[in-house]
Length: 235
Image (cartoon, rainbow, N blue to C red; front, side):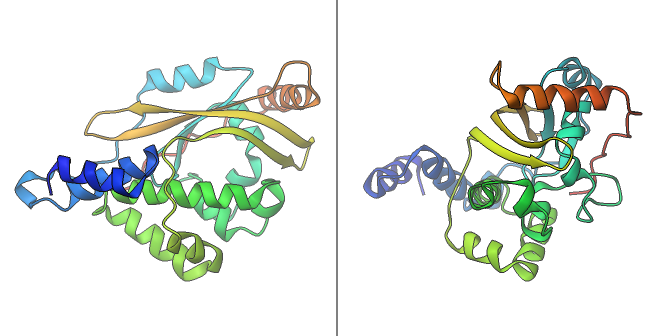
């Protein structure tokens, strides 16, 4: 299917920008094998990215791949997202997966104050990744696992919602400091081998209780030993 035809379909269906991007990704994936780009490979986060994360002392910052694996983070992100990192859904490499935590850990519905919105966004982000990389084995296995174990995920996956851009306000309930209302922004972080990771930043509005609580967590993180960073596993 040519891009002109895809564009015509997108206009006829009145797709939003994320849905339009997803449709183009599906069309590219359906082309003959000789025209389809080679499968993306997981790549390690280079040291300069970790240096960047560590320099952000007043923001929670982490890098995740399209499958929602957290593959690098700063100390503030480790402290803020302690329930995610400490969850039984974290893999043997110490790498949390936000989708697994959201749908398979009962504590997620307390940590994410607006859990329903978090679940919709997480499902939409995975749907977008499936359009970009429909043949990724690890992604297929993750979707199969979530579909088998979580009725909530199955219903959201069946809705075919797509989310590419990820930003807004998020409320979290932290066991040490209570509720925080934070602004978050995700940015594409292109890597080698066609890999595209996502840099996500959480910050608090200046002068708010949430800022005080985020500073408290940052201070606690600064006094604790730095845990080993998660590593990329096989795709």
